[in-house]
Image (tube, one colour):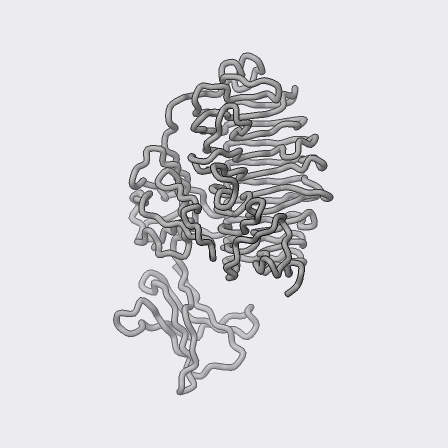
Length: 478
């Protein structure tokens, strides 16, 4: 076997290519090794990296990436790369030193790195990390991602580490924007979930707005929900922070900082720090002039249900639930995504390939989603299953897909020379046809499907005289 890791399962050097609806996964069951470091020899860890992007203008849309050595490597050459709506989970391994393997590992130089609407959880290391030892960290837009329970499977006992981490100590972070993200770390493990100042370097500017961050941090532990020190300018507005034991926000006080309009839920302790002293909320307001229009409460936060439409697929959305009341189920208004009569399914994001948690035809009424008895996919080859976080019922994430298109499930050449295509779908709710093509560009309808034998959930089409070299697809019009 080679001494160094092989190329990624998907390595993109071309420009302006879109990849959508692919599953990228590893099958090797080696998840624990007895050596340290982030680059073990492949003969020790025969686990493939997943995705590396070097071309510019590349889009990764609604991919499912799991059980590889690491999720995405999106480096400075990948100008204007976007990852949207992707599900990234269970990537990495346990070394003798710590957990390794990041959901999205990124650097940036020109253009903008855009990560939006992704669901990133249960990596063996960070969820999103911006780090370099010789490149640059510039121009990031990170919005409406759900990042949770990373860095908890194989790290130090009692500690969940960072969910989002930026900084290097040698290269300044510039133009970092985090908008509308949802972050959760196990409330039984200490953590520093959003750390934007790793390495203590001299950073330029960061804008953190409308994010929701919940975790266990503790006064006196040095861990805060959000840290953003050593920046020339910090904008921190309209965020909601909840910590079981306080320790909310650490920043370096600078004249250009804007910190206001935030909502905090804590323990009324020394929850704020200006990189010199710790303060209660009222002391923080008096000493710094920050957060004068913000609020602070020692009460439990109210439940939050967010429905975020998918930018590239109509009638698809991520549903995020912070269920502080520990209800067995929650009602979710999806009228912003579905129309009356739409066929839909709701998938548990933490176990994507399990049966849907809810299916039906949308009537306009809220969907009642279960918050209990949901399962979490265990990393392939991982035997310490009790170390895999299960945030329910306090926190769950779902994927809503409406008007689910038919999917080809099998194809076979029959003894009489005909070609049988079998697929799952709902022809009674849509107009389906089978099309073929010689070039994947010009498609021609060749027939309508029929029901499979009684009792079968599938539908089928038989091409009586198939032409060699043809491509087939099922087309659905709702």
